[in-house]
Image (cartoon, rainbow, N blue to C red; front, side, top):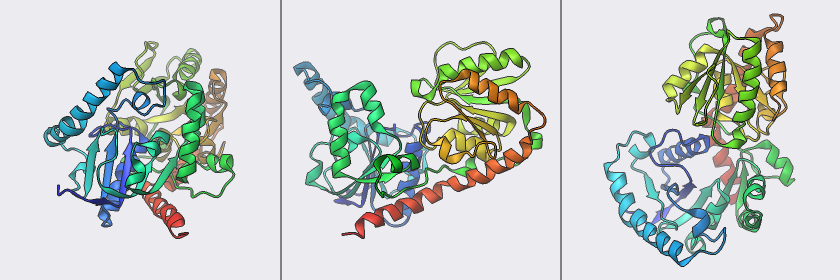
Length: 378
């Protein structure tokens, strides 16, 4: 690719290059990047997946000399050698990397030496990258959840950095609940997915209503431990029910759970189209990607009240909401759904209709409007 001197957009992400399971946010960044490039903008993505952020930026305790030298060596290896070789030899299987208008940067610990009109990141530390003010015109902070919760649970001292990131950036909300938290009028974008990838050609009549599908993640905030306890109760009452999990959960699981580790998109779609029920057990979520995937596939979804799902599901119409951290509550709701008096097919059809609002193409439209909102004020 021809070396650029200016980028219209630079996205900073914690995702890993060429990794299709990097999460919903990174998939959206891929889509935004491709869409912007298709519209003629110069776009870059800076991947920080190999960066020791907490130690390098000083967001934790003061660095030791040994750690400092280790990081300096890593900077040279990654930014000067590894990234260039890696990008050349790795199979380019993602549309993002096939697009010649998208510039890829890996683990530089600092911004590329180009003029950047708009820096966009969903990470508070991404706003605070060293030397940023020398070559960046505008900072945009994509807010997916309440970052102060994460910081309070890890390192309260970092709250001052979060406040700085809020102060110097233009905030764009991807979670309606955050608009209420800030009490200010900030642009809201739809947190969408590629709906076509998960639409099913069959109807609810073809689904297995003796099958429940649940994402199980290693991250404690995803609620796997509560899901497993709820599934124990469900299995005890309905021993013939097929219980299927998927995700990156690595702890031992009960034998009654059929688990698919880091499943492919094609296999996941097959499970969505087959399963009659879906459970989201998270403790905190924005607009959950698996929830929308399950709904567009026509699954009857039970979700904890964990933030974003309350803005998607209308309880009893297109899905069901239960308290978080409450295995008994999940079991009770599922038990009610096994009552044949509930019109499951109608709920499935309503779920599909609701999910249609979360098309990733709407995300791009909203993003452009959000940028215009700020830049037209100048």
